[in-house]
Amino acid sequence: MADWMKELNKLEGGVDDSYNPFSNIVDTESPSLNFTFGGSWGLPKGFSVALWGPRKGGKSLITNMMAAKIHKDDPTAWVIKFNTEGRELLQFPPAVREQWGVDNKRYKCFEVNSPALVFDVIEKQLSAMIQDGMNIGLVIIDSINQIRGRRSLNADTVDTQQIGDHAATLKDGFSRILQAHRQGKFALAIVCQASAEMDKHEVMRGHTIKMNAPNAVQHYAEYFLYVEKILSKEGRVDELGNDLADESLKDVAGKADLTGHKIRVQMRASSGGVAGRTGVFTLDYKRGVINVHEEVFKLGVARGVIEKPTNSSYSFCGKKWTGKPATLAALKGDLSLQAEIVKELKKRDLEGKFKEKDQALEKALEDSPDTIEDDLSDI
Image (tube, rainbow, N blue to C red):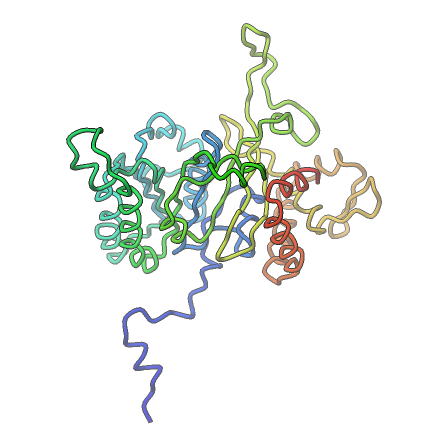
């Protein structure tokens, strides 16, 4: 009798069931950001995340965080960036990359905005390099909005209208790289700008902006992460109310120099996890992500991993603390304790213990997306 599985395995495109994308991820130093991806706690390699939100909200910053973390975790991984906005040496020069933990010997940026110099390079040159043994762990396109349409490249003047050119170019570009992306098993981070929401019904619901990306991109990506700088006072203080500022340095108005701020992220849609999860991390302008212990505390309490025997006490695996300041101090001074709590959070996620809670969260998100952020910020 014929071995049909053996025959089928000879055909091109057969799925390798032994590969687990949820065990092969690109994550960041922020546990609450990783948490938004669901049980994988990171972006599975071979798939993509679209980062969008208000201008200067932290989208490019998150791609930098991913680049630094994959270099930390994998000593052979390469990061390739297509900076279509031409700001690489202004926003992420070599010295800054080193501060963040990026290995400049395994990082290459191309400042191009011709679609051929992005999509053709991924489909052909990068794919060939991967087949030759190059370990490309992460590819970044920042941003898709500055990629030129094909017809506009051939126009003699900006006065020539090219209706639908940009959308059609991106549609074809992403369809061309799909096979190289899947087979090459690299993570893809796509930065998208935001545009004004013109649907009056959405505006009435409080949604004043939307992701500025054609339908083809919205169908291509698996994860859609909304990113915004927290502009309220909450975004300028730590968990104990201390200002993220240097009081020794002030401007002519007597205002202290800010040393950092908080960024909120929310997984608005997901093909590989749950929608609606929110995370908040603190960015220090010189040191990168800081106060990770605060994220561990808030996430641990919110998920029940850090228990509250009384209103003023906290406990985890036999360790007990009285009061929030004491608990935060214990976490800040013990990196292994932080790691234990994060490990337990991941373990419970993978076991599906939070499935019902996440389904309820997803339903609430559909009803009123903005209230989710407000509710979680009170934890």
